Image (cartoon, rainbow, N blue to C red; front, side, top):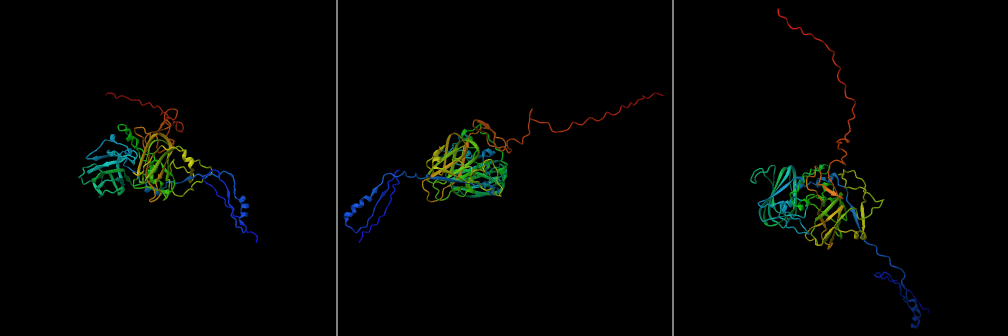
Amino acid sequence: MAAQKTLRLKTLLLPKLRLFFSIVFVSIEIMKPPVLLLSWIKHLVLFGPLAVASPVLASVLVLQKAPPLTAERVPLYPENLARYHFGADVKAMPQSNPIATLRLSSNGEDRNTAEAALLCDDPTTGYRLPAGLSTILVSLPNIENIESISFVNDDAQGEFAIAISNADVPGTSPEWHIVQKKPIPRGAFKAKIGPGEAKYVKLTFNVTHPGRVAAFGVYATPAVSDFTMPRPRKVSFTDNSSSFALINFNFTDLHAQARGLYASSGELKELNNLIDDQAATSYRFAPGDATPIVVIDLGRERVLSRLCAVYASQPGSVEFYVLRNLPASLPNDAAVAPQSNVQKISNTSQTADLPTSLTISEKEFAGLKPVGSVANTNEGRASVNFPETAGRYVMLKWHPATTQGQPFSIAQVAAFGVSKHGSSGQGGEANHRTDGKEWMDGKNILDNKEIPAEGPGEAQAPAEGPPPGLPPVPPFTFIPQVPPTSP
């Protein structure tokens, strides 16, 4: 009976080597004497290097573009009136500390005792609420239609009451209208207290365990005009510390034309939640997002020197970036989001020609240098100071220690930079300089095109005809006067 031989070839690749070998094994089923097996050894061949293995494709990060802000979402973003740049003021009783003693937070640490922190734009700088009975009185520049207040409480325990008034009257006056009285809540808190007219907001605390209060806000009834006709800003910090002046204008303020631009995951229409100056709102990434990333468009190039963020307390690290351009080249045929019929809140920062998705390779990301990073994110807040850096985009990249459990979320992101002490003019921010030049920003007109020309050589005579002539001279008439005669 003829020998039956079956040959099976197997190729083994060695992925850990740049060069791989092909090893061919011959499996033989034979009915002849074993001596014939030697003749088949030649079929076991070890081939030399055949080719260079194809490199493994580098992983990429894909960011999705957020939709533009629309009028339908305006009610979700009331403007915070409890800010020094709007002319508000705060006083703590019985113990009050001057503004000059304000200390900024650093890497999650915050031991500030000046109540001025409550009216600053930095959500990571808070006020140490002492034990016992104390009062915080916030005065607004004008009587406003107030709808809600909010703050973040870390560890303080006890009770508190909220009262509003149109006049600065003694605490026992019946003109104070108590709108809420309850135990001090933990974490982010928002209370609806209106709508109701008020110029003064008073919070009375009876604290049994001291803690920290931050990200304080007093919000008026939201309106589209908050975005189209900015409120006048009053900035005058010449007599105060430089650190206090630094954190009194946030370039990522949603009402100052900044916009959430890209995110690695999540409900993109809610991306502006992280720049709305509300402690009780946040942006949540999708579960399992291993590297949560957000990109914020500041509207134009700014000069920044401090970035901070408040987020979910989870082990990990965060990196801060300031970019002049987006970290990927945009193709000429990039897809553009279709135009919608809904009313958009127009602003110069919303670049409609950007693609709906942004792909960044690991190589491109490795070429970016962060302006700062925080290794421990357990505190739920981080801030970094760095040399003045110009850029239009702010990018934050988190590295959670684990993607298991609750999805990662961000409450607030804030960016601060160079400002010139003094008044900023109506509707604008403080004077800022870019590329060594000083300019005044935030006018309600575009490029001063609506301002009439003034001065010699600029003003133009009105297009009118010749002036009318004088009326004709009346004819001369002599009227003799005859004096009376005596009889």
